[in-house]
Image (cartoon, rainbow, N blue to C red):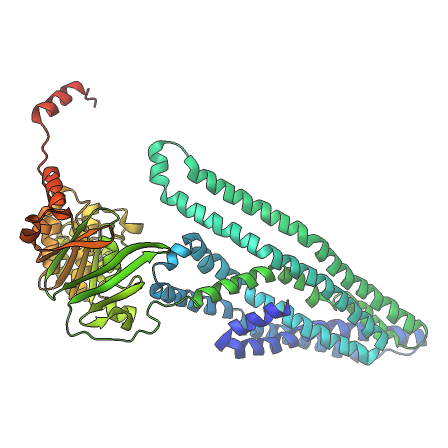
Length: 597
């Protein structure tokens, strides 16, 4: 328990000073909270003594006691206010910084990190795990640290009046600590199980939400909802089991403290009966005995979540210790933008994708990369952008190894347009501005016009200020693609990578996309993964990738005259692009299919 508490204090980092001042305020708040009871008990004892001895009672003592109680109550709330002001917001402030830090870390790790760690795992770390620290961390610190500081001070105070009473209180606290240790052990044992259940539930929920279009299209729930239901039921059953495991230790912890309270009453009553303690002091102890351990009683609620907190901190440390792909990189400014692969090999896990690949792409030329699906085309582009580190060989840009760059300094030289465009849940303007956060409205409009998307943006309900659905769900594929090209134009990088940017575009939008790409690629070093003949034939160089190797390279004219992969590929593409629908067949089908309104 105390080990986890120490870790939380260390987690507070730069906020430790505020944390410690909060401890001081909490200590005084507790004492000023207990003091009115002691003053009232002492005054009552004096009144009973006066009545028993037949002496007149000093009524001024009542006024003084009342004034003292008012002052003590005000002081209690004063220190409680400052304790809350100093400590309560620490968790939120640290968690906000930690989430931003994790975002920066995830931006700098290899994409392989996301294959080794599931989306549900990462999501639960940033949300559930960090929220546990955010909401529970400061409460645990306050209850555990302040609780035990206060109880130690109280026991020392009891020792001043009565050594036996202090020993009874110390015995009750020691016994409760033993049972709290049992709670902590249960918490540590159950935390990984509960954590796994939360991760599975997060992952199942994400999968279900992503798969909803498929679920709807087939008109059935399918396996995705089944796994989600199972994850939810597993989480419920695990939490019920955990609570049942805690119950015996909770009861024993509270029982030991209540037993100590009863013991205090008996000891002080016995000492008063034997004349070893004055009546006012005994009454003070009796009134105080059942609230004396209040600060320690609440610790059991904190002990429940100590294992969860410990596990959350382990996961946060694991994320923070992730290896940066640009760990040894420096900020480099390039003077040239030629690209060179020199005996590069790369694979995911144990499966090698690229085998001893070598080629050069001169500056300000267009290179088309062609090959079968899964041959390694996209992997080449990912290695240029340093999304992964090569297993062997080197990738150079402008004569510099990409390993020498920081991610930011490398990627400011590269714009990428993907087949599957992702737009953020933000305005159209901000999605374009993502290419250059410092761009003016005028520059954004110029980029949109070049990307052939200005006209359709103006037709949207709020123009450039129209909110785009998550992932760009409110726009068509062609519209999303043109917006992604607009942000690439705005970035204006000297190297442009087009990863099948026109593969899934309908013919109606294709000419607009091609015009937009022409604006984007003018005067730059271009690498394009392409299937369309027009794009391939006009390239300065063609790289033919087959089974992870460069099978052929050269111009279209050179390669078409050679027997090999490229010639077969072109023949297949010509047949595909030259395919026409028989008009008579279409007419026949139209007559056969009934039309209803």
